[in-house]
Image (cartoon, rainbow over all chains, first blue to last red; front, side, top):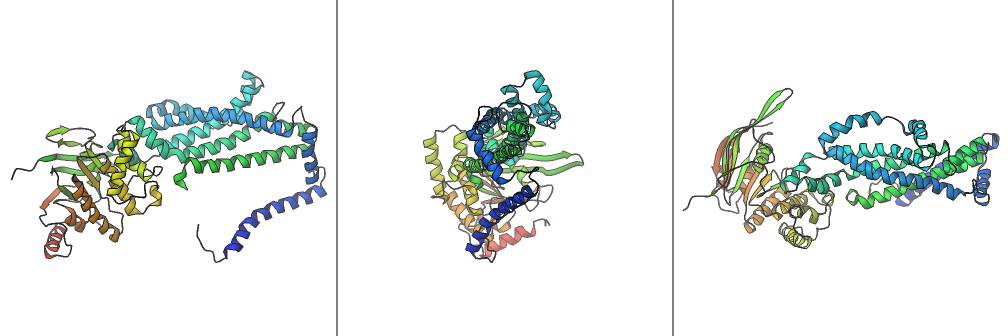
Length: 261
Length: 253
């Protein structure tokens, strides 16, 4: 980190704070210019801002923007908790146990490439359009990256680390718990990160196909009612929450894997 | 003088690996004795055989033919009385120095307070007091290998196997580590098998040197070393022995 580029430190700080601000500024200017000349295609920032305020004073489907955001988040979090529990355990199982890998591996390889939204018709036919099918859909979308990252991480553990465990008298479960899983932890965490972002995109897709609450339902509602400002409000909220989630995960990784930093 | 007790006997060990492109013999008909309490150096110039031989002695791998006797009895599988210092260090990056050193004690089911105390003793022995809570990444190569030595010592092994522990260190650190290793060994006497490809290191450390040939590894010669310690690396006797072994060593490029 102590690399010298020839620039004085103060200047460098200004530069690396300034550049992101500049990028956002340019997007804002582009937005204003574009919406100014094409008001039908793009609402202006001011219009979006007043629409944003209105979501609190005049709730949509009896819910404010925060309520909609929470509805989406709640679905994702419930699905993620289930996916973390099952996906990580399943990934450990097929990464560690060769017989389990031989048995489940091929089924998993076939199911893996199916995009989660392709399950929507089947899931709606089986479970209707309530809460459970949406959570199930997010579960499917998050389960896959977790299993892949976890099992790859476990398989990649250097044989010598396992030999260390054997030489120092560890039995199979001690070696798994004390050596193999911690070694695979950075890779498991990469799976967690992917699961959060793919969970967040899947829940919105699920909500766009029919829901009373949730950010995805706001997008659909705005689209069908030609209320582009509402669409923009929902899209920006989705982006902000997505970005916040990834920042939280980065911080969490530093807590869970302190030796990497 | 009563005859030396044999801690381990290796009898006609051969290890052949079979692959898609045929087979490859790493070690061939290796027989050797390890006496109780000695510092035995296995000197091998080649790339092959040494780690495999150690893995067979410790029970991590099985020989294709031949057998290993421990305290006079044939032994198969992992031997709990053997500790090992690994060539590639193989410290756990996610464990602190303390947690790495107490690994074997933890696996053995010792309670936390007791194993902390024991681990602390060995951390001090290798000169790492004060670094208990560091992660391996934060330590230099020499310090990391000290952690490896403390980890092996902590399980109180009867036989300590060291696989080219100083191979990756720079010359200066290497000399320091050799000297310190002997000090540790004087203080905590164990039977040691030390593997190296460095002739000077072998002559400096060993009570006996077993010279292996290049691929496949066979026992070429056994040299008793009766120079008193600490040895002077530039004394006439030392240089004479060194040259003698060096002339008998297969070149490996």
